[in-house]
Length: 161
Image 1 (cartoon, rainbow, N blue to C red):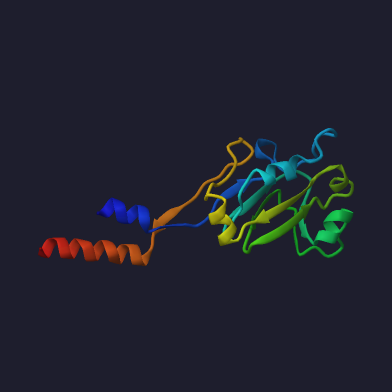
Image 2: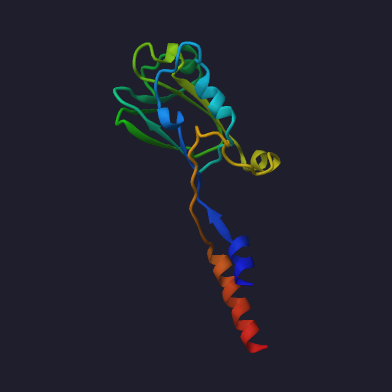
């Protein structure tokens, strides 16, 4: 009974995706300017997931769709140049990312991430990240309060009868 409850009542906090895999967030080769969008389209992002951008002498910005298309932003909604940026995907819908270094976006260092709603996520069969090495996904599972109470209740009733 405990195993059943543990499987049914666990909560998933989210996946951590490594943008660009082992290479990180870098200017892609000239013949592969869609590498980040190809990678993003192979994954199923959900609210609660995080994107990890690793880079040197660069930056990452979350921008509007228009700014993404123009590869330019004077007021990004998010900016980081720490070299190890973690960005939390906190709602469903599209997120637009570009490099903040002049010329990098035009060379393909940009990405659209579509975060699925819970309905879309269920319709996609619940599959998570890509099988490619570009994504390092991990999750943390824990017991919900309801799960613990169900386990406790089943333990008490089995002891009484």
